[in-house]
Image (cartoon, rainbow, N blue to C red; front, top):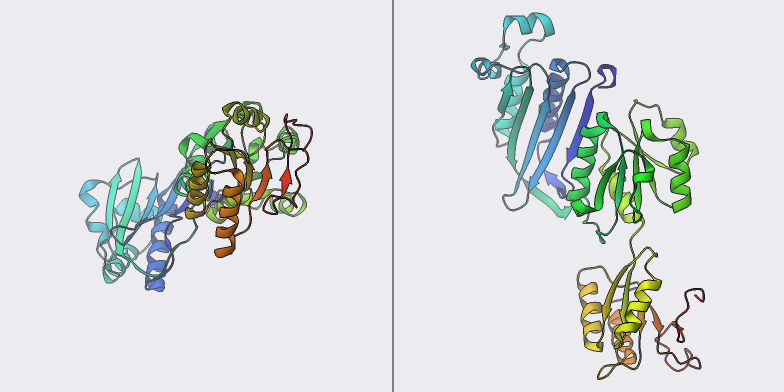
Length: 376
């Protein structure tokens, strides 16, 4: 793809089951033939895309190869699936080939339980696609949903990077990131203040970008635009590199999960104290939830465990009415022990400077009032 400067996009649905039963040889032959045709009939500087989708409710997998090449006139579209047939004599003389590839591919797709179809328009390109019934051996998704969709992604790009940027965004959305958490920028000075990850295309990667990620302690992923041009950099710098000519879902997923945003629970019956703590934690890399009653705190803790995204830090007031912070942490520790969970770090914010861990071993630390950000 690189010798024609084509933009080659690969999208494989991250929710596709980890293991499926399929005639791999036939499926591979079909996909390789469709991609080879797309490459052959697509002019320099255009794009080719392989997209594999998954419909869990229907139990099917869809495959599509789309190009922005010369296209096929409607009156010739059915004939190209016949053996030794091409769209026109001019096509055969210009691009070569026997005309057997699509006929064999159509038969293989039929053998696999589907039908090879075509959508095309002259001068705009073609889309070959089919849907197959899916037999899953391991129903777990190829990539687990992002445990905390609070990451904020900035994509540093220029106009020519739009197709790859859209493909990256498609992966991020399917992995569970909200669309509002992804922003395209032309300069790092446009990056939102709450950015947690930066993706920069090769043409935009410079000293200013390096300084920005170093100052803000952000993970950086660089998109290689020229084939193998960043191999040496990948070995010498602390940066992830993905190629726009390759499959990069695993790198994107690792990027999102390598820096999980911690969840903080603040429980205090005094709303003023809650707002003060939120203000102190405002610039920290965390998600804050609050409760003014012990039962509400217990419910939030239980919900976090249930959805496999428990709280990392607890700030509990021990003098809440009915159910105190002591009662909350005692119940949580029992649940953690019962289910062999990693204990949350619990801090008492009751304001008793003489309190210590010996008074309640379930707490990890005690903070006196008034709160002071410098003392931490």
